[in-house]
Image (cartoon, rainbow, N blue to C red; front, side, top):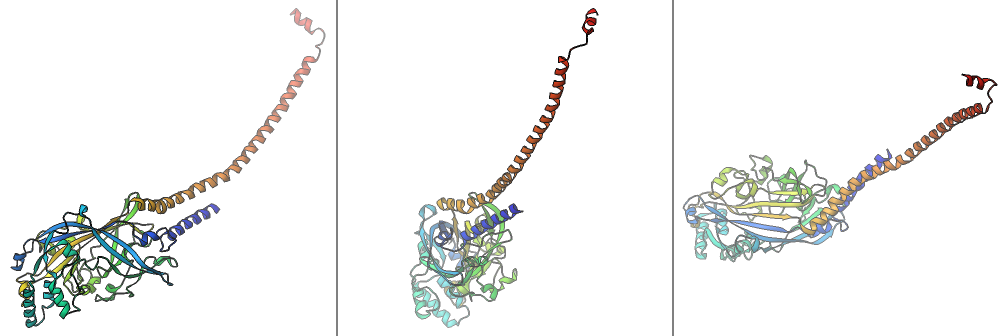
Length: 487
């Protein structure tokens, strides 16, 4: 019974050690890993080059050609780290990007034909406006040389370009767009932070470790049309609670998507000798409200498989989806020539070490789309048929490697495993130590018995020898020898 209690106590100590090592505490092993993510992250961007812009203006089906990847090294670091009294810590995480020519298939100076988001978004936003305003907009577009499609470099599309239309909009409609200088799809992400996160440290209440308490001071957003969709759930997307099971899920809040997302368990795996759980996106992630009623709050919806993000993207008709409309209504991919969705290339996954909740290998892939159509009264939109046109898709990937991987394996995998097996070795050793006195006692008893048996048998032998000796020494009666001689 004592050995059993000792074994249970050892397991409890092992579990307590793991808890201590993963919580957000300057004294924990994983704190520096949380503060300065040592995993090299890469952003790979694929553009959809428009092959037939003139035909699209005539009402033809869009044809695209995938270009890329254009790969950027992503650097992240936390600052303004503040520990609060309610078991939380607040921080800002800054991101910056550096182009990697040797990993890319092309240069930032490459030209890409893309929809002119400013023109087509502004036109659609004015669809129900007065015809007089539409005519003024058409005249302004013509004066500024704006067209429905543009030919820009990768660098301009990513990080921004000067546009006279943007300056005009900011002058007369200063609150319409958040861009005050250059307009670029990733301009807001470079050398900027993702908002002020406040998360639980797990020091006082381990059950809430890494969960988001607030983002930018609020516990829910107001972009969507239901309380459930506006909730900030899960973690900040970097670490999760340890001791996972196949019933666990990965939930996190994404400022870029303006919503919380939940990934589900798929299978067990091994990454560089470390056991992992793979989590993937469920089919319902971007499903519309008809297919999955809880997503009704993200509507107005179109076909299933794309999410309308216009309410958090300056009311522009932008949609999120999986690359090439993977896992979406087939009519979306069929409406654009050049798309080939498949799970191997276009599905996202996260491989998590289940004991610590730390990501080992991840690849998050999303696609940005623009809804375009002809708007009566605005000549630049021509006869464009309504279509959700893909602009680009990107993948954020990272895998633990090098010295960081070795340190993680040694301290958070190997050592706990050694401690786990050490308890059985010590248990066996304890049993041996308990058996030694018993065996010694048994051996002593056997020796005493043998000695007693040999002593008893020896006394009988001595009596027999003595009797024989006495018989030899006794004289024979007279006449006996003579008689024998005669015979």
